[in-house]
Image 1 (cartoon, rainbow, N blue to C red):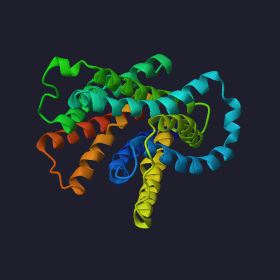
Image 2 (cartoon, rainbow, N blue to C red; image 1 turned 135 degrees about the vertical axis):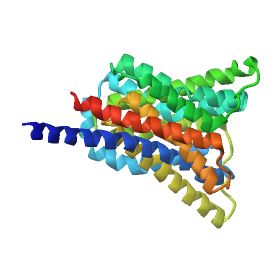
Image 3 (cartoon, rainbow, N blue to C red; image 1 turned 180 degrees about the vertical axis):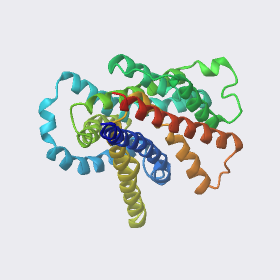
Length: 317
């Protein structure tokens, strides 16, 4: 009997642990985005890039959604509301708020407030999903956030005066963090009633109408007349951006989220800033500093213990 129990426990634990690390990998791929976006920004605005990216993603996601169309029969009003939070809130509005915050507020204060996303996600997961945090989870949250702080700011204080910290930009940064945290929680909720491929497809497809409106309201001219070579470069980079940090990352993310608590997943997303540091080091020859190395160590330590905690907690059920 004991052998059977041990075997059953290991079978249940393995996909849970792998699910957590799929979220880590999916979020890490978001850090590749700047490699393609820098080239695209020479010809297009941010909203135009996001719109075209979602057009490519629509073409890839529509056949998947059609194959899984049976999932749509069970959608209720609460599911529709969750989908709007994930697609409009997480994909469109949060990005717009964060971009405007960077333009109108103190850069360091905005970046610091954006790091509060896990707090929003954990709070919403406790309220909406009734997730209970394991023992010592608060310590791991503090360790992970401290590591993220060191990655971003090093040993320095991120703002010089309280007036820089309290501004309209700070409010928008908090709004973006809340929407991204809510998107994680709502994505986990949706995975209880539909496949992760369906959630991924709907995230991209439902965001498209809003992005058309935002781009039209912006009124910026489309500048793609730089010759065949430039048009080809834009098209290739757009395709790679849509498929790598776009489609592939979200498929991995939602597949992992399927067996991962939202409160755990939001900390797994901290792999994103680590990828950005690695990209800057490899591609742009920016040296990794001692504080950043300390931040790496703290985040990976927190991720390791969080992964083990979720596996042990679920194995007890």
